[in-house]
Length: 215
Ligand SMILES: [Zn+2]
Ligand SMILES: [Zn+2]
Picture 1 (cartoon, rainbow, N blue to C red):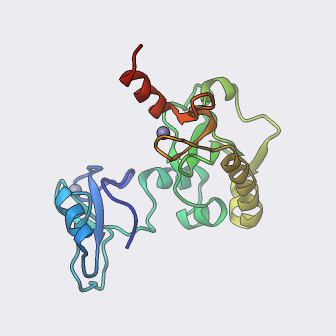
Picture 2 (picture 1 turned 180 degrees about the vertical axis):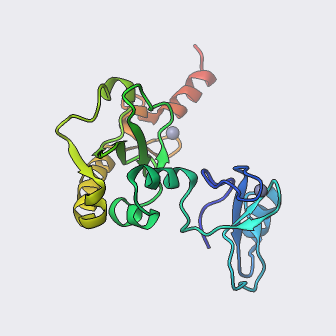
């Protein structure tokens, strides 16, 4: 069974257009599955796997639809901007891409990130795209068009040199992962830009601690 619960980001229901779909799980449900179904964060699909397995169910219109492998709305947009199929994106760049909100500057570069926390960023300005590390301050770092010397690629690289693109993305992602820190309060991993080294905690936990003890 999948690990995801709750409303799936970027999964827009083809029936009603709402982004309000939750995972549909199959097989004999355990006690935990029943609890989660009661909370409405998953739906139970029954013990028998139907031939045409739907991965999600829409909480707005009850439609069962889709599969895990389908691109999200953001991933479909990314493939469209690159002018390739979603499968080509996955082969060369991996999955889990989401539009980085608030990064569409006047320079016309569309930014997407992948990983949780974000590990690699792709900026697209046809016919080029660059791979880069996700930045905390996109506005400051990303001035001007994609003319830097970074890792610059084209659509042809995605189609014909997927391994080269994948390696470049993984170099950035693994370096980025090494910069992550563990929060001593929530014990989740945090990217350096939202981690307070002095407090040893993520921004969110540090803010919560300040609210509890305002003196
Ligand atoms: Zn729907
Ligand atoms: Zn924390």
